[in-house]
Image 1 (cartoon, rainbow, N blue to C red):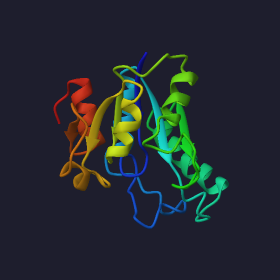
Image 2: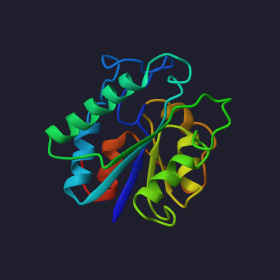
Image 3: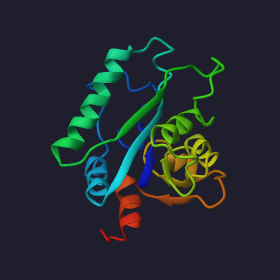
Length: 180
């Protein structure tokens, strides 16, 4: 199986320092939906791992989060692709969970879902160091995008072997050996 794990906010959709709190605020980054579709058509399995502390903070509820994820899946399906799994951490930073990135809990859930011992060699695409570190704890390969918070993150210290790209479409071009 060719598996890839994507962060959501800042990779697939526009991010906001005030949190993405509603369906109207969930706006895809240009080219991201098409990039996911291209992966699917090339035989990749796509998983999304996302921190959603806005739930714990009371900024939106589980129904609204479900609506945002439905919109994301629907946009991908309308173009002939699919997202095979979405996992999220609903906790705040001080809740003491093991799923909030940079901890590896979400990635363990993904590995278990797909009956994998680890995520060795699996591309992990994020716009922050914590996205990359969480996936690397199970052997994932770090890919940073400069969308969302990624431009700022790219100016700091990144995990060893991190590859940096302008956006998700550029990561997909690289993985599929395509030129844009």
